[in-house]
Length: 257
Image (cartoon, rainbow, N blue to C red; front, side, top):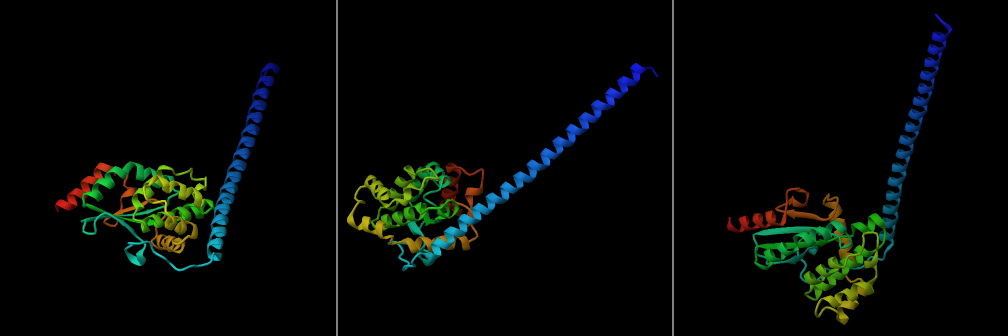
């Protein structure tokens, strides 16, 4: 074998050795990144658990008041605010959080249909107000806004004020609804709502314990997110084929049946 061939083979082996070393180093970096990512995920979960624990502790340390249901509330423990006629053949049950962007998206998309069906007497809607975002992100905006819409229910202005809050919903991470003054100012968008009685109800947190009871019922029901929208016991919000038109057809079919 010539010296030139020996040198060529040696050079090739050296190149292969260098490539193997590079591959080993890359594999090591990959394993480090995977482990690092796993640690970040665990820390993220721990942070969420920490927030939940902190909020749970905060809630348990709050002074418990009497559960005051809003006027006209119905259902088990009077946790449902009804919209529409009692005799409607179809009932839509909605669990929602006034601070929840997905709830706002549902309301914006389905509101005209829900209003039409409720006003025609074909659909009865039962709203349950919860405070899921408060627990997930901290703050009290979900609680304060839920209390405020319950106060609006006392004044017979629930639906209009409920819609006004969603139309002016802050970003999920912005706890603007924690400010009672903000909630009272938005009542000016609903004729006849901004009264001393409404302001007192909002400022005093008259229905806070009622909201907390609804939150416990939500958790006890095994629901995992908002909005949870039930028609005939089925969560139609999870149906990816559901549209306002399809919902309307289902309700009209039930009325004809």
